[in-house]
Length: 123
Image 1: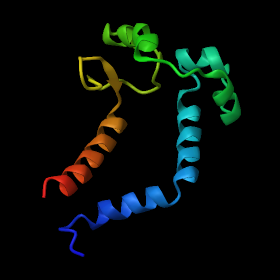
Image 2 (image 1 turned 90 degrees about the horizontal axis):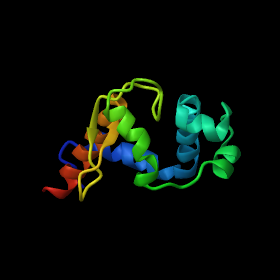
Image 3 (image 1 turned 180 degrees about the horizontal axis):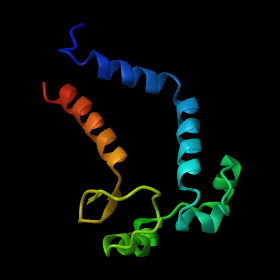
């Protein structure tokens, strides 16, 4: 089957979907190690990075629950409120405009995903 030069992207998708649980656990470990010191997570995890503690203590929230933190970031506050890296831009979540803090790493990953998606859909 011809892939029109997108073999690398297809290989990445295959690798990510073959070991999804392992990859999800690794991603959560990385997130916790990077962001456990943020103001938001300190309130729930107290500096610890255990997966079970995260599952037990960190609630599922809505955008409105996070909006006060996001507003502080949008107003220029530079402390580690939600993210440990500098916010490079803010996007929207679709529908009505909502501020979404975005790091450079996330923006790069989003571009990769968008390129893979567009290559398979716009043909």
